[in-house]
Amino acid sequence: MTRTAFPFYAQDISALARSLHRQLDSCEQTPGHVELLNMLARAAGSRNFQHFRAQTVARLKMSEPMETATPVDYLELQRCARYFDAAGRLARWPTKFSHQEPCLWVLWSRMTSRQTLTERNVNELLLASHTFEDPALLRRELKERNMVTRTVDGREYRRVERKPAPLALALIRRLRQSRH
Image (cartoon, rainbow, N blue to C red; front, side, top):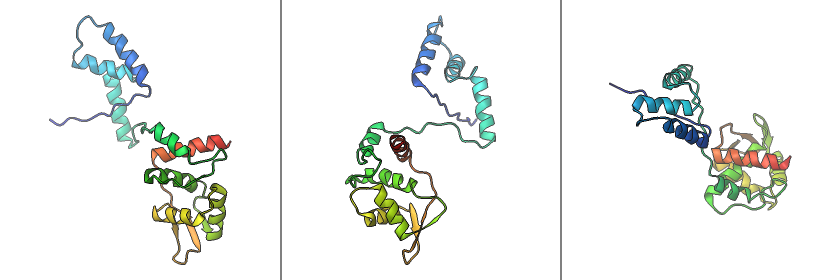
């Protein structure tokens, strides 16, 4: 017999723990398997496990992705944010490779989507977005990491539409908030 796996997600782990604690305290004996399933389902916001299961099956049938929170390493986010000044400009190029890409995603997010840009437009945008005056380095890195495409002669650039990693998305949001 094959089992269907049901992904479990709770928005607030503290509320989940409190709910489970209250439910377990009200038990006179150790709860069984089904009782534990019901407790977990209630702690996550469903009426019981049947309700949780029906919701999950319905979502899967509708081909909607389950709501999942991709974890962001907030310490890394803080470290990456340090490369930017108060105006949201990249103040220095990160030496750590893992910090370079999130910083490039910020610059990528400032490019207009679905629009062809000249090399001059890209340079102007990059010069306005960083303080160490090396747009060639940034253009090259954006191209090498497939964030932009360019013609063979280098005259036209286009932003490649794809979803940034969770850390990069969090950095983009943080810098947008600080700029406004």
